Figure 1 (tube, rainbow over the protein chains, first blue to last red):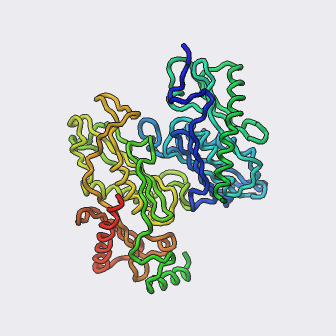
Figure 2 (spheres, each protein chain N blue to C red):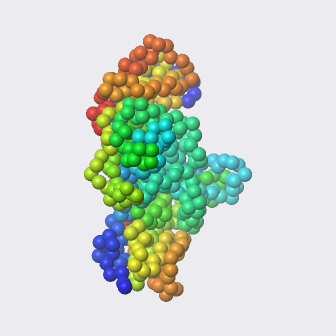
Figure 3 (tube, one colour):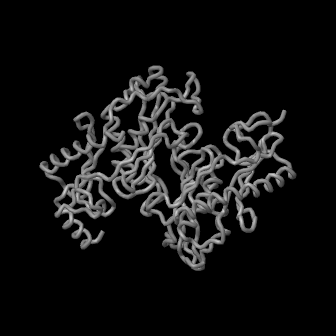
Amino acid sequence: MAYTKRIDGRKKFDELRPISAKTGIIQRANGSAMFQIGKTVAYAAVYGPRELHPKFMQNPKKGILRCYYNMMPFSGSGDRVRPGPNRRAKEISMVTEKSLLPVLDLEQFPNSVVDVFIEFPQTDAGSRCAGICAASMALADAGIPMKDLVSAVSVGRVDDKIVVDLDYSEEAYEGGPVADIPMAVIPSTGNVSLLQMDGEISKEMLIEALEIGKKKLAEIHDAQRKALKEKYK
Amino acid sequence: MNEAMKKHLIESLNKGVRYDKRKLDEFRKVEVEYGISKSAEGSARVKLGDTEVIAGVKLSVEKPYPDTPDEGMLMVGAELLPLSSPEFETGPPGIKSIELARVVDRGVREAKAVDVKKLCIEKGEKVWAMFIDVCTINDAGNLLDASGIAVLAALKDAKFPKYDGVEINYKEHTDEKLPLSKYPLPVTVYKIGKNLVVDPNLDEQEAYDARLTVTTTEGNICALQKGGDNPLSIDEIKQMVGLAMKKSEELIKVL
């Protein structure tokens, strides 16, 4: 058995789903962005730098970053998602923070917080990566000092093939082993700031998948930059 | 809002002038977009000027409540997302979002907008349940009326998923729509000083003395909610209800 054709009809195994991106979508926020890849849609809004409460959490040396990943109740592929944070959302929020921190310079904002709220009206796998793409655009839109954007996508394997940007049908493929590897890269250095995996994969396949992912992330980076520039046209 | 700013706002309103140049009884531009979430059975985005909310309907099969064994279930939830305003915080729903959800819920329920008897699959055992969730995207005032429109639009957009009697297949939807026959729209009238205003922007919403949400359908009132720290006279209530009913008739055309 081999995985010969992508379930959703994409021609190539390293082909991304269609991307659409926009900044400045939420007027009340200091910065905001929408990032859509296939049927996964992420909204991100940045509030801050603003005063951090409770006070004991303040850092007198630099500002802190807080990210909140949240699926809207009707955004899951099956049953209604109960509102409010669960274990999954909390963990994703934490790894989202870690993926963005390396590009941020928050030293000018002691005792402050930058809050990033990431919401999903609809999802079809790859939501944490879409969230990171939207969040880094929203941070740039808010004018937070940054060394670079962060681009993210999931790579992995479906049976014998290395694939990029798995959708839900590929994550749930039953004809052979599957591995899902969300990854984020800082484009200017090529360094990886988010890496998770579940499934089954060999060391060789993993490294190859990461290399392919890094290459394909250039397309996502382009879409992000284009959307940021678009606002000032 | 401080006293001087409130005084200035009221003086302008007394002259019939709103900061955004609208008439006192004028709504901002209303935009409705259907089917904005592919994951939901029905969804809609509503914009009232810069205010933006989205609502989504999820349908599932549940055991009915014992006191209504042959009726489908309805629940409206609302989340004032911290994404949509610097004033909204994370954490469990606060009183603002609870009130908003309950007032919208009451309108849809009491107007019998959806014929819940038609949602019965097997009496006492299986009925369709409608969970309608409102999520705020941008708060530029009057989230309640925007949510009311969004919930009705999402219900109008909804289609049943495939159901074989045991399991729901959320990936495939039928062409069958919800038995929705009425559109009970909530319209909130704000009293600011002596003036009655609809569809407040943020400044007006901060300065109000009292408000009355009136949900009407086909010329009848089906839900009311008074809010704010100050009381209303019966005469004021009469005027507010009249204004809300008139506005509701205009607004229904956007659906």
